[in-house]
Image (cartoon, rainbow, N blue to C red; front, side, top):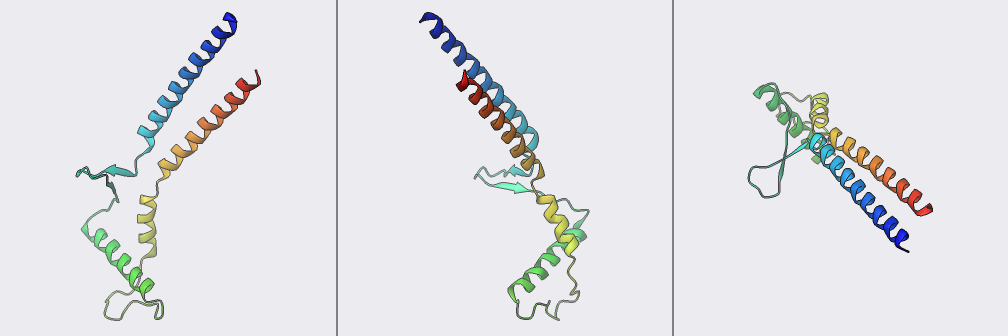
Length: 131
């Protein structure tokens, strides 16, 4: 009976150590990979997502193209930019480039790593339950 209690206590200690190691790994991965959103300075629980531009002209071009795209999306009967807008072309590549900047690739890598950790944890649980 004492031997069985010692084995159970040892199993609990090992499990606690494994959990700590997993949590530390998740913390390390989170610090490295959660990059898309940055906490806003106002502490209201909001975040900022950053887009990189070369200058104000590129920022203006992004805004104008997004607005033109929205005009077409709102008025799907005519499906064209109004003739009062001088440059009616929409630079879809520019809009997609901004979208790619906002795409949370690092965060998906984090999810992937956590899924591997979870799978390993489940496999260890199955091995332990078979003992």
